[in-house]
Length: 95
Image (cartoon, rainbow, N blue to C red; front, side, top):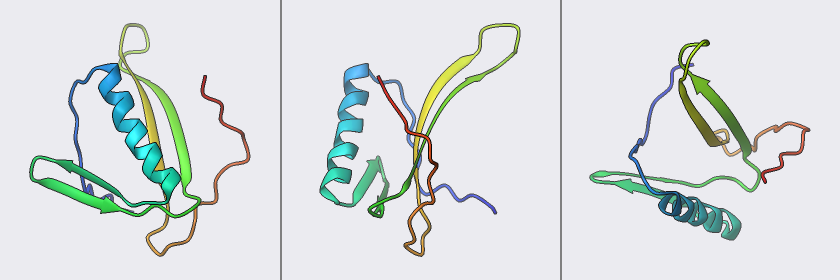
């Protein structure tokens, strides 16, 4: 299935700025509100269902024998038709 990018923003930020952005998303999720992403002239509003699939991924990109780029990715997924994600059975812990 082809992927259509509806919004993308990427820039260096301090840990505090990133935490503030994640906290804003967490607050909106907890309140059941929609989430609006805005950067420059780009803007998109999304309405996650009550139980979307939450994917967390830690990756290293680059050569296997040398330094590469590390990342932590957080992703919420759900079907556009409103059905909720199937999720996995393993419990996620973040410390």
